[in-house]
Length: 230
Ligand code: CA
Image 1 (cartoon, rainbow, N blue to C red):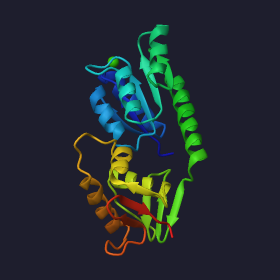
Image 2 (image 1 turned 90 degrees about the vertical axis):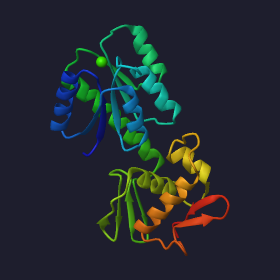
Image 3 (image 1 turned 60 degrees about the vertical axis):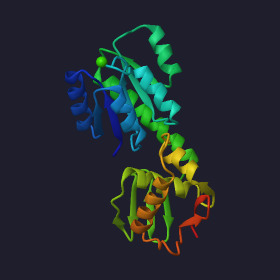
Image 4 (image 1 turned 60 degrees about the horizontal axis):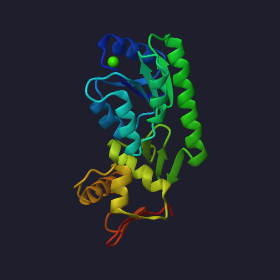
């Protein structure tokens, strides 16, 4: 199965119980106890679903949702709330939550919603992109977020993976450093464009692309890079 869920809940009892039960049914689970941490973690990528409590210290669930959507992160969100008011439900959807569950809830109900949201997002991905890309001896499996060279699994950081995934999905396009910063790093103000070059250097080494005469990740002088599958 291999889906990774980010569970955001400040009440430790609920968080631990849910984490355990989700693990038992086969999900990988990461947790956060406040909204700020959740936004940062979700921004790094690799999360398939966020289960997000509405009432959190500091930044609440609605603000987390809003912030994620503003950053261009559309990971499905299942919002949990103790408040049963319709108003919250409507606000939640307006901020970009995909589904909503009122506490107290039955675990099987949570599981059913979780499965439905994951299925929906996997289907949506499938419409857009194939899940496996092959070039030379390199295979990128987008479903598992893994990359293999000559059948050996590479150890990539999240950003290296995201960058390579972005390249293969935009093969043949000239990609300016600024665009890569914006779409792969969710650009933070003042971030140097050299960030891109450093990561490209690491990636080339890992996928055994010759930096002096690259076959796949080619430099476009003065602009950025172009990924070539040929
Ligand atoms: Ca709470």
